Amino acid sequence: MSSLACPEGIVHTASAPDFLPVRLLRDLQLDRLRGIVRRAYERVPLFRARMEERGLTPASLRALEDLAAFPFTVKADLRDTYPFGLFASPMEEVVRLHASSGTTGKPIVVAYTQADLDVWSEVMLRTFAACGVHRGDVVQNAYGYGLFTGGLGAHYGAESLGATVIPMSGGNTERQLMVMQDFGVTALCSTPSYFLHLLERARETKAGLGQLRVGVFGAEPWSDAMRSRIEAESGIRAYDIYGLSEIIGPGVGSECGRQDGLHLFEDHFFPEVVDPSTGAVLPEGTEGELVLTTLSKQAMPMIRYRTRDITAIRPEPCECGRTLRRIRRISRRSDDMFVIRGVNVFPSQVETALLAVEGTLPHYQIVLTREKGLDAMEVRVEVTPEVFSDRIRALEELRHKLSRSVEHTLGIRAAVTLVEPRTIQRSEGKARRVLDQREI
Ligand code: DLL
Image (cartoon, rainbow, N blue to C red):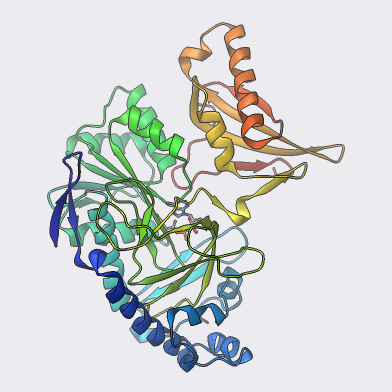
């Protein structure tokens, strides 16, 4: 470990694997990839059958590019083999299980050996270090503990960094604020939407955020506009971290002091970006769906897992010196998209349009309706108490501005409804942005 000072004077502790010369990193990746493909082939019937269907064996993998010929794995594969069908280690070697609920039916189950947990702690340690958290920091971990990977993943990473960890889990906002102040918390882990909720309560109760300096936020999409609001209102630095249960949990990628894309911990997770409809591998820099292959996972290797997350690989070197390639922040998932009168819309675009207008709060919901066979979208957005207490005319003006901003950004019209402060439900975990009225 060494220390790097970034321009803001924050010390970012750096871990050696983040700075491997690129050639060494590619050699290491190929070496590990061969091992993992062999493990998957030898130990998991589904992987073996899929490879054999294509006439592939582990020996077919001679270069990193050869991976493109290998079959994808999708979420349905985990559901179809529920609960333990993709495990590559005997149960005696599995020391932890987590599960992710997903949107339909049974959860998916993920497994870890002790070696997997060690890798997880390491990549989370590197995540914290990249976000400028170090030994001596007091970390309040408000990611949910339990089957969700956020809580325990962040917990062990922060502990192995040598920080002081407060295992709060999500919820109980008043208590979170009390602990934050009384225990001298300097770093907070939570979803960005839950932090907004904490911030709002802190303002209402005049609690303040004590010595909070850094937010380690992830598990859901949040826009640059949202980050600007968070940083301006709280005075902290808000970092984006990325991960998913199927691959390991949090710790797949993280921003560094530059806050300009997320470095992927490529020595453990190999990235490709593919065309979401054809599955063809896209050149670096082109936007598409992120596909990840685990390079060191023992209990549950993943070969070419389709994340559904939309991003692009940014191969150019980062000023921080890390040689790990970056991905663009994930603003959307291919399956979050909805179509309104033929136009593809993502919640993140609506968020950007709303936050571009002053007088709004970052609390909104999108309601999809169908009237006489026509799809329609209503956007409910909270206004600031100042605006709300203003004259009706001011509200009308704001509504028009928002409606124009949505139309300008998306190219379609939506009914905008201004709602009173504190009327949109706050989330303690991941935010639920889209409501389908046909469902409720
Ligand atoms: O959300 C793991 C995690 C915990 C990541 C804490 C970061 C912090 P899952 O519940 O399996 O795992 O959900 C994974 O959440 O495929 C993305 O669609 C979304 N997601 C996670 N991080 C981000 C992020 C955890 N920084 C799914 N930006 C992923 C956008 C994110 N989306």
